Image (cartoon, rainbow, N blue to C red; front, side, top):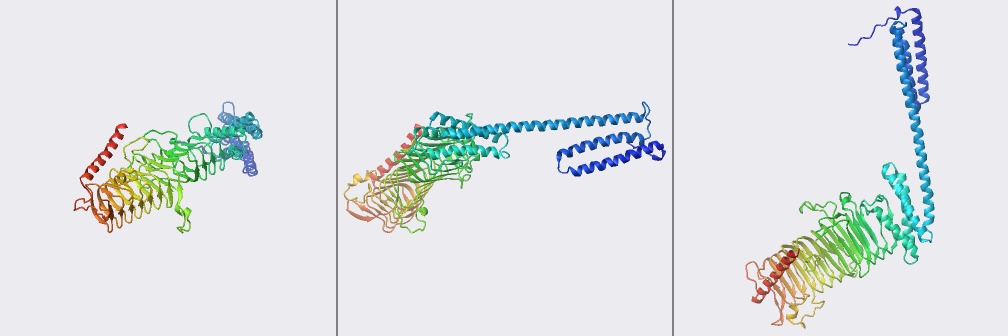
Length: 624
């Protein structure tokens, strides 16, 4: 246990007492001096640091004299007092040397920091000078000079971007602003000087070079370029005379392509490595004119569609495509889509896709699970007051949906579709794969369809054809169940005509304009008020609930030999009897009665039809 010595000042000699008094007075005066200095230097960290160092050295020096005297130690040679005094002074001297070294080091660091700041400032000044010169040269009419200015500006922007990334994005906003200002200059050049009507050839070449350099820096592949993904690119209203290809991009939200004209192709390939960060990856390309084709796809994809890029929304509003162009959207998925999950895990997860305007010759959607696709302008945007007085809007070209599981597809009311609508039909699918996709909802109400409509799915939840007119064939095929097939007050024409009396019955049966529905069973079939001017073939085993009030089959109807209807309301349902040359009542086969609409020829024909369908599946499966 450490015990402090008991100091009795009365036992000290008068000289020692006098010395202690002097040391005490000096110590108190010193403390007052340090206190006054501390008040004067309040808030100044550097001077406060010096004060602490001096105060500590002062206390040690004062203690080195005070303690030997107070302890009445001898100051003779080798005496305890002399040894203690020497030790204390040595310590205080060492501390003074240490603090002196630290102060010098601090001053050297300050000088070095000033030198670095000066070098950085000189570097920034050099960039500013190069930036100004390059901006002047980019408007030169000499192509090599203008191109050299483009490369110089991109290199200067790269330097600012590298500073922004390496020095911390949050604490280095000035570097980001400098890089953004250069990008704004490049985008402005494209908007102002890329117009095809008044651009010289050198300006078009400069614009193409700028886009090539920008696309290289948005590419997330390790290609040696700086990453410009955090910056804004405003190309609104620009005219691109060259192909625009964004490869492996992480962010598309920062790129404004609205109102642009693309003389050549536009291709956007998304980085699949950034799928976890794609919750807000929206593709908004509105009011554009496309004289070439448009492709939206992942940077990587496989034939089977196992690799997909996550996108939260795709909108191409008021788009104007050339007649021979195409729109292809493929191998995409919603951000929260689980490819290994079942329907319950992916419930409520969908990728909205909205396309309308003058569509191309072919619009295709491939390998997009959980897609909610709307092709054609929404009714409420055409008729905000819901007056109902709007005319039909024409949709040109074919619409093809292939290998899109749980898809929702809608063509809004009041449209005329001139092309083929093909949803998963294996006969004309590109890879001819067996049907494995389910369809959620197909909605084409109050529309006029001038060409074939082909719909196929493993299971189909809902099909809506309310008050629509079909000029060509309708083919619906499900390997299992169709939940609801609703087509009241619709018309199915024979090659666009209602004149069925002048066409021979045999020709009518073999016409390509027929209606064919094939499924294991249907929960609800609604055909009330519907007129079939083309031949109808129902290859269905069971219908749970049927409404066919005032349904008329003008060209004949055939049903499966196994068809049974559990519940139905078919008042006024009629068909034309060619042998009697008049309309007669049509009776649907109930669950407790044989099929009155089948004969031996029909049995053979139905059996051959079913065998043909299964052969299609087998052939397609073997081809794969």
